[in-house]
Image 1: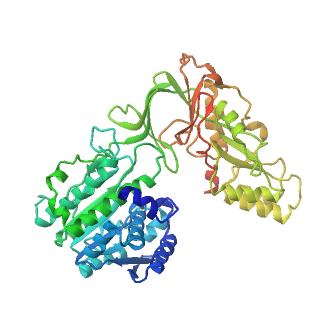
Image 2 (image 1 turned 180 degrees about the vertical axis):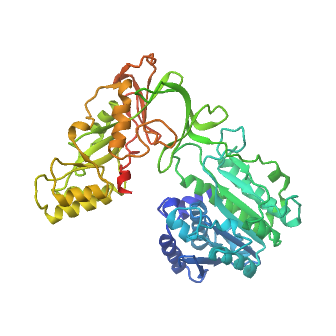
Image 3 (image 1 turned 135 degrees about the horizontal axis):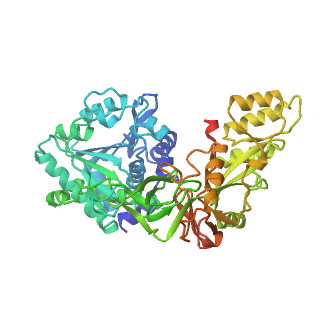
Amino acid sequence: MSLWEDFLDVQVSTKSPPQLRHHDLVGLLGNLHSGSPEAVELSCVGQSYEGRSIPLLKLGTGPVRIFAWSQMHGNEPTHTAVLLALVNLLLSSPKHPTSKAILSGCTLFLLPMLNPDGVERTTRRNAQDIDINRDALHLQSPEGKLLNEMVKTIQPHFALNLHNQKPRTSVHTTSQQVAAVSLLVPPINRENTETDEIRRAKQVAVSFLQAVRPYCEGMISRYDADFMPRCFGEWVQQQGVPTLTVEAGGWTMPNSDLSQVVQLHFTGLVSALEAIATGRYLQEDPAEYDTLPRSAEHDLFDLLLRGITVANGGAQTPFVADLGINLGETGQIEDLGDLCITSGKISVDGTKLICVPGKIVYAPEISPCKLPDQQQAKKFLARGVTSVIGQLDLAVPTQLDALIGLKEGLNLPVNLGFIAVVPSSLEKPPADILERLIRAASLGLLGVIAKDVSEDIASFLQYFKIPRLNEHDLVSATDESIELANLSRSTWEMANLLGLKNRGSIKLGMEADLLLLKDNELKKSSSVIPCSDLQQVMVAGTVVFNEGELLSHTGGRLLTSRFAE
């Protein structure tokens, strides 16, 4: 079998790389060590700024010392998963030809998570807000000091600096192809002086790219960077250690399974280690590295709508624009206007389409205990509804418990939020009602429906700026058409009434909850478009409804109010 196929047997964590936290890593490394304590040394070599342990693994008995570190940027997790799979391969299959070559030819020193504080925050920087990879000279971060000390102590013959780049980085400035792999041999000066160490690092890079090329043809680039004296890659290279920086990028389509990127980089990294262990890398032509196209960050959007008519409703005149949308935790509109110099993983011709904000509607029959089923969700989407506001009855304890469960995520194609119903005309509310209201508010309650409430509740609502609402002010879910002139009332005003930031309009930074309709001579401000003209519905940039058919059962988010922040 190939290394690509081997990965499926040795991947360790069941979580996707961005979900892996420090305590997960500690547990997984403990399991790997306990299974083969004689084959791997596991030690804590330092602590982060906030006191989290930084573990080091040592494997192999060979003469060539290789030092690799990952997640010096806390939000760059791919190679942590790669290193875990590598260790599992070496420990579980020591007689595998590749494992045998690496273990006998090399001694590996692996730091799988240099910046655990950043991992906990899902941020690039550490707990001091220092970019560790810009701290190679001043060494003001404990993590940077540790990395410096490890290089001096190990005195490696090769170093691997493992990162993630932006997942929408393209392979070069004019390409529409995403870069799945970007390699960089850090220079030792601004003149790019070629040394024997740099030549050998380039040969290792070629070993890496040849291993991955069959699985990502046309998706490999040279990382777009010049001499950066503050960075550790440059510093380690300056110590006379052949150093290769590896950047994991994106995959072919939006919402691709990120495990394929891990699998790709596992294949490349293990192959490069075997090439070093056997000396095979010396047969590679370093000039092949130099011919790699230089990557570019020119806003390769996940989705690009070309030439679409944007209608925000009200007094705003419709206009034609390109919309650049990126997915992720929030699928947002990243750019708007003339985007002819950019491209997208998916590009849609919008010249015969109208784009309007998705409806936000009130549906009191929906509660945390009674979520819309797939047929109901399909009916909402068919009417252009992307966000459904249900009702939370504070007199029913199970509803609050169910709402807490929804914080883990929705399995719905529409967004969902809740307004609480508070018992009225009580001089003194029961303590449990007030307690439930406080808990609901902490979960992002969008508002409260109540005509008369006790003084305690009124004070609470006023202090936390939770709006008191009347049902007649809320847009119902019964509209069968999309009235362009009233979009401002039905979307933007509804979003503001409920404290929903970044929704209800088509602007920069807004969530891409969008309706795409047939262009029906839009120029008339009184246009009323029947929902039968609805072509597609996007929720957070993902097409969940297309020409009457439900495409996805997920994509919706639990809506929380800005008043709860």
